[in-house]
Length: 272
Image (cartoon, rainbow, N blue to C red; front, side, top):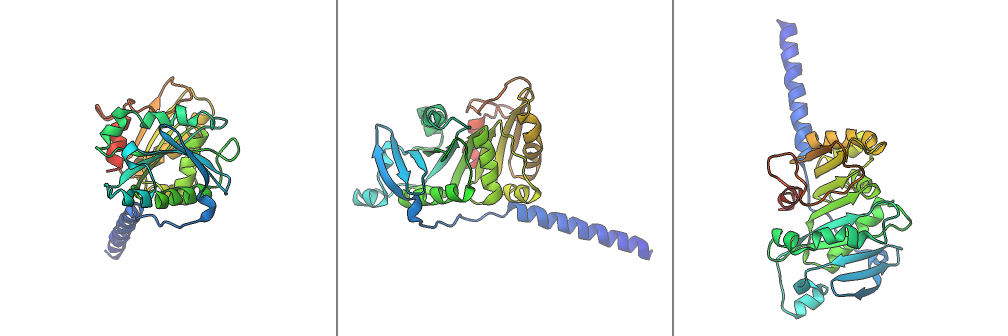
């Protein structure tokens, strides 16, 4: 009888531990914003739709804001504009893809169809460039995002999604493994990142949509473990697998495998 009681007590303790772990994995908080002059625009210019800027930390980026929200916080306040805050999508290009990233990835989120799905105010789109031909240093890009939110206070720092392709997708995983509060959601196509246990624990606080193709040799095998674990651990997450799509990035009309739900449907809900 004593042995039976001990077994029951052990099982109860184990269930409580599992429950506490799952609760901890769901804990999120508003990201802290730290001003850092190294990530403030050293020079910038505005074309028809995008702000191009360069920081003294060596990072250049393009930022899209809906036309009625362009200008920094001071300028908007002078215009007596106090709009509702908007989400932001941060697009990370693949290796050697930084010069085409704005047109290849950023354009996905600047169409009227996508902008309108997020409400009348639309969304911001940030396309940073890697310092070399690939992304590294998640601390630096976390600081960059924080300072963009400080400068453009219309952006809601608690509703930011990381979107990545290939090496950029791997960097989204690396960033949430480093700082689980930088993104509310992550959307990755063709990521080869294999997260450590600690990184998985951190990333499980983020809603993830991961997509891979079985014929993407070398990428599929490396990225599968992380994608499948996060689809189970992370709240409201999805894993989408294709047979023959090769090396690809997620398009908004892609389906998630949950009925008629599209990637855009999932992203809108994830950033509500």
